[in-house]
Length: 347
Image (cartoon, rainbow, N blue to C red; front, side, top):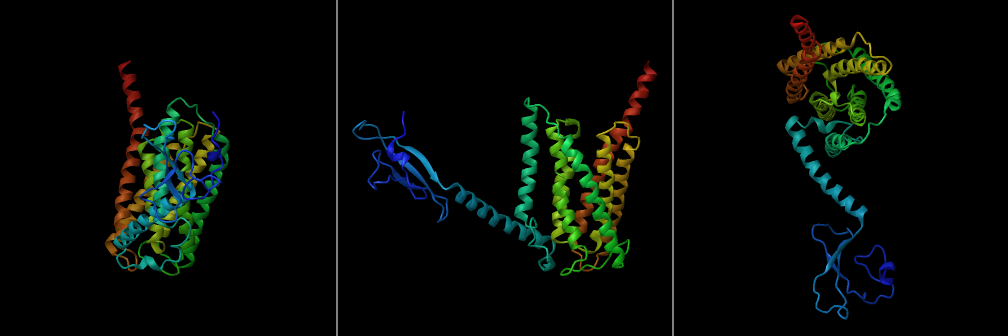
């Protein structure tokens, strides 16, 4: 059945479909505005009525959307952005009642807004859930080793740079190893490296992507997903509120550990016999212990100019990571030898 002449000659970018001859369509098309869309969005429902001479008794109508999809997408994003901006203000005002965060010279940088950060979090969780379902539905594992061959060295270079850069800046500006170091709201010494560190947490999401595409389900643990998702959220908060001063210590510690970690990933792609594997987890635990001490000192000292609620949130969060990693360490390196020794005794 061919396409009707009037349908094939519809004019584009009009509020409703209309043929070239400006006469009423033979099927009686009636534009019906769609509620819920703001002015300027070209979206209506076209009601197609049957021809009276063909079937006069039929009353049902067919509703077809005639929308400008790009305009709809823009309108949806604008609505979402408006909601997200309100949530951003509420959260930042709660976390930093002094409003000092408004002086940050980095608040307008790409990715610095809550709308983008929240969308990234939703996209990450959606990929974990949907990607896992798809890959477990019979889709063969996708070989990602060529990409990882480039990704892991890139992470080594990036993490080592951030670690050294934060250390050099701290040394040049006379920072102490203990809180409370100077915090400059308008001219943050650690501002650029903090922004880079925040963005690097987006890059870290590729760890999860490689796991799911490669169907390495043993590595897709609650600890893995929780750590990658929440560390990004925590450093969004740090980047917007606590972007200078004592934040340098977490960049050095985390940057150093991630440098060693991605070196391990790179080596493990070439050999399975890595004698220092368990020491990597031990180093991560030492990192969290150090961060716990730092967080406790910051909370107890109430450092001047540093947002007071951030160290509390930070301390609680680091505690959760410490116990999750401790549980992983015990299950991976302490429980198995006991089981094997029990088997030998029974034999």
